[in-house]
Every structure is written in structure tokens, then in C-alpha cells.
Length: 311
Image (tube, rainbow, N blue to C red; front, side):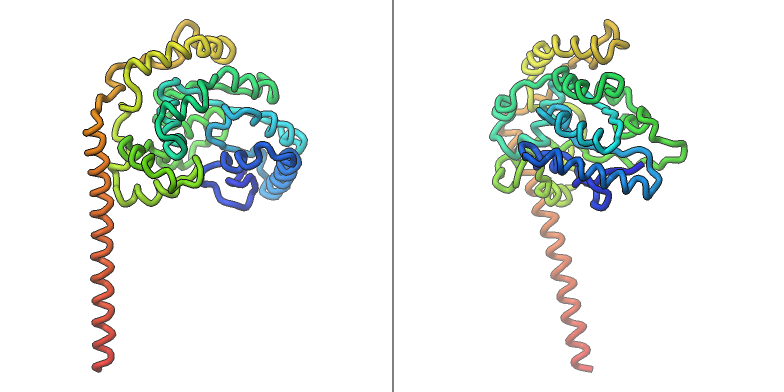
């Protein structure tokens, strides 16, 4: 197995997946030629290491208009037989996650972000991939941690693609959800982000804040209970079409667990600001500790230098 790097080659590292690279290619007249060249180079690298499977992981590529048309033909031209593994999520959960992952960096509110992007369709997205890859090559799964080994989607991906083996060492799940107060705090300084895929600010703040930078539970205050219900009603027809075409084994059962009131947190504006202030205090406190330790080390080093001069 060969895991393509973030730049879709065999030499670079893998950190965020190829989503940023594919974003760069969108709208470029030479994207097909460049991708064909990358796939040919990857095929050579696979021959050199005796790999028979190339893995590409690009977050949210499923819903990007034109992504299937851009990606699949060059892969076929280089001799690959594509297999697409797609995860679909309950819409209220997906929109909350999308806002925290991308929207906080580009829009002043969840509503503005969702309005700008429209209400997407899993079914339409899957149809585009089916058109290019073929129905037998398209594997669709609901994003449900209760169906994943140890609740880990990565472990599920390796199992369903046959890439796992008994002695495989699986790392701890990564990419935990950011706490909502931290999302709000970063949203107030959107000028710090280069684009919606820029994670440098979080990478700086999270170590300073500590565990409080991440969610401790699944409940959210970003959508009210009524908003969630409205979203699920709006998505019902799309979910039924998706299930009939790609997940008929669910029969009359719903694709996703039903919405529960405890999934919604009630939080006033003043409570949100207090939570943000607490995060800032944690960050400043950590910085203060680091500065104090640095000053202590500097003072000791200076004292040792003075001693050497006196001797």
C-alpha cells in the first residue's frame, strides 16, 4: 500500500490529506495533465516498493463540484482502477462540523457560511462519483461511530477496503473536535487565517490552552433543537433517495440515530464570552509559565558564565 502525500506524490508528507492540493487545481486548464503526470509517477513509485494499492484521502472531496470529473479520468489513464469509499453524515452534525472546520475562518456566522454554500446533497454528490467510477466501485457508509471499530472511522476504512491485517498497529484517533468557545474565539480573528484550510492558528493555540481546547462531549450550542429538526426534515427526501440507491440494507430503519434533546446545549451569549475568556486566561497562563522558565534558564546560564570568568 502506498499513501499519497498532501501534494499527491510519493515523496512529501501526509498531514491534512490532498484537499488543499485539489483546491489549487480547480479551474486550472492544465489540471488533467498535471494529475495524469502525478498518477504516472505514483505508479512508478508503487512498482518500486511492490505496492498494489494507492490510498488518497481528501476530506470533504465528496461534495466538491467537479471533483470526480477532475480526479477519476487521469487515474484511469495512468492504469489505476478506482474504488471510492464515501462517508455520509447526518446533516445537522455535518453542518456543525463544517462550520468548525472551515466556516469559522471565512464567514462571520454559521448561518452566513451555510447560506453561501447552499444546502448540499449527499445523493447528488454520490451520483457524480458513481458516474465516473461506476456503481460497483462506490462504497457508501453512514458516518456512525456505533458502526465503526472502537468508534474510529479510520479503522473502519481499513477494514472495508481490506487493507488491515491482524498485527496492524493503529494509532489513537486524531483530529478531535475543537471546543465551541475556541471556535468562536478564532472566528473573531478571521484575518489570521490564509484560507479555510489553514490550521496554523489552532496549532498554536491548542497547546497553550490544553485539553480545554477540545470538546469533551458531543452536545453543541451552534444549532438549536428547532434548527436541527428543520434541517433533518429538509434532508429527509435526500436521505431516503440515498438509502434506496446506495444503502438498501437499512430497509425501513433510519440511516442515522434520531435527534435527541441532550445533543443540544443551551448557552447564553454572556456564558459564551465567559468561556472564551477562560480559554484566553489558560493560554496567557501557559505563556507566563514558559516565559518564567525561560528567564530562569537564562539567569542560570548567565551566572555560570560569570563563574567561569572569575575562575
